[in-house]
Image 1: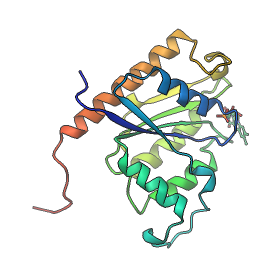
Image 2: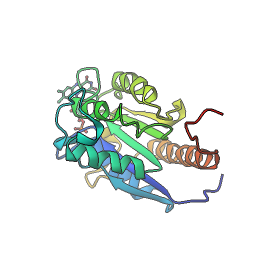
Image 3: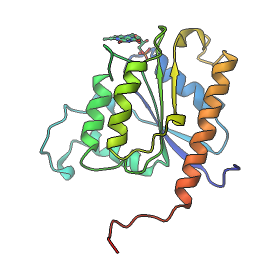
Length: 195
Ligand SMILES: Cc1cc2nc3c(=O)[nH]c(=O)nc-3n(C[C@H](O)[C@H](O)[C@H](O)COP(=O)(O)O)c2cc1C
């Protein structure tokens, strides 16, 4: 399908590490994405306070409000995250917990990559993250997920994707994301009112 619109993508890395492979991968993907993809970067995760249940949405801390604004503006989200102790990194889950009640992920197309230097490809992080994103209303079909084992062997020292098969997988993921965005934008908007 030929894209008819610009796609605003919010890229979120689940790692705060300066030399993060996941963050590097997101930049590499932005570098090879078709021109109709416009990337914004979420730099808020480190500054988001531990989730405090019962906080009114309007009283949430500034970094949470900033993340909510970024999510609202985006046509889709692209997450790349490592697996920590067989689960989702705490900073990412913490940020998502703040979004549960404000609902910015409702109907939002989300592509999820779990990248790990080991053989596992972050499979358990993927298994843990998908139900969270889906219960929050995110549109995450299985075709928008990609596990990337041995990620250190698939990029060079400059952070470029060098593995041909993986590059094709990434481009396919972006193509699918584009189709999901286009399909969603042609659907009538929900008003929340019952007829
Ligand atoms: C606290 C911690 C727990 C980890 N647990 C796992 C794990 O369960 N599975 C896995 O594949 N890698 C695990 N790793 C290794 C990470 O996949 C590896 O450090 C990876 O490079 C982190 O992603 P980043 O490069 O984007 O920071 C763990 C690393 C840390 C620091």
